[in-house]
Length: 518
Ligand code: MLC
Image 1 (tube, helix red, strand yellow):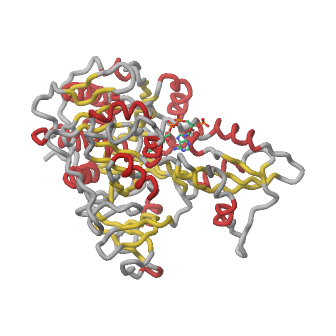
Image 2 (cartoon, rainbow, N blue to C red):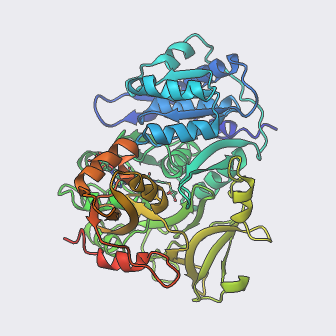
Image 3 (tube, helix red, strand yellow):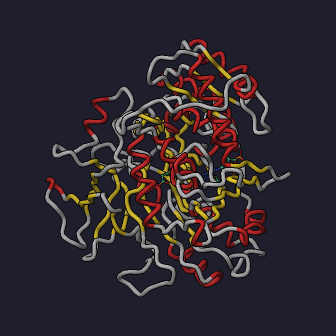
């Protein structure tokens, strides 16, 4: 049996494959049928197979969001290669690390970036660099056009790696989480049932896809959800609250990070009328404020379903899929991430490894079919993240209630989540400390009305040096992705330290917590 994930997705396509699978919703509409997805992914897969690449070669992709990028992902699955998506905001120094670490056989980038990315790729030994733009141009599609539109997916086992998702590391170096065909398929199947994706006979579902395509949320949870149910997607290259609201009446399912919900609530045309055909609003990737949950429910009559996952595990827990808000303990509750998904084992570990009782706070640990295969070429890091008895340590801290419902209350890792993107202070501090005149720095996350948390830096100038905070921000924008760049930089004579000499980040967070208030 071929456990290539593409086979399961292809089997779920509707009988009439000339129906629309994806309609683009920003700009002139373009319609992609299920046949289009199948044929075009076959052509790109055939192009890759003609390159005679070693098994498990990596295809690293940094492009703008487009349907063709999704097709490229399907092609990589079909060809039995490993898909490595990168945030399109990453800059040269970040790309240098990812390409050096992944050693991809193929790199696909936007043509505006070809000059510098192909140079980095060449130095790393990559033999094939193609371009792919969001207007269906670029050398990838030109080359693929010469190949057949039929292809038999390369046989894969459930344990074979399908993708490497880079996650920021506590020490500043990103780690590549390897997810297998089986990890992704099992999770998509569980969510299909749990979230009650409706078959065509039940009226079908239509998903608004407005998330980036380089992370677990947009690429797997959203795209797999629709593909595995043969459901149409209304496709936004970029989230825009007004444009999404205008198309909501045609949709039944929406997935977003909390920032998208905050922005929908700030959009005057958004409300119950626009949501009249909606069945399900799902939120994840960052904590959803109870206030946003409440305002959303008041404005639309819908209770947002919050779920929890991460790159290493795909989805782990979910609030229930009830169509009407039920009373606790069974309904959706603001501020909780719900129950372990079927097949997922979840435990809360206290100090010394003892198991916590309901209500007791401890480290969230998980086991299950969607837990990743380890970090790419980092066996020691992988070993560190698992307990001796094989549970993955999520790095999140929380408690279960007596029904098994999980509430997250913090993170053991020093992580900031801004607008659904993870930022590790150590990485940003590393770049800040290299700036002229900077002696040391501390990076923290503080509440932000739009992004949930925003990155803020406190800099200590070297004796006799003058440091301009705005110039520091401008300098960092040249070096790292914009979402990691501090939204505010302040200067200090020294950093507060405890008796052990450790910077007191909690104190700094407290001092700066009103930086974006109002
Ligand atoms: C953009 N900017 C951000 C930012 N996104 N700053 C902080 N945090 C963010 N998340 C900055 C840019 O650098 C730029 O700065 C300015 O905002 C405008 O850029 P933009 O690209 O036009 O921004 P916008 O379109 O408004 O993007 C905001 C957003 C986007 C919320 C739509 O960040 C987004 O799509 N987030 C979703 C992330 C996601 O999918 N996460 C899933 C991870 S998977 P300047 O200074 O240059 O103007 C995961 C597992 C799981 O976590 O469980 O799901």
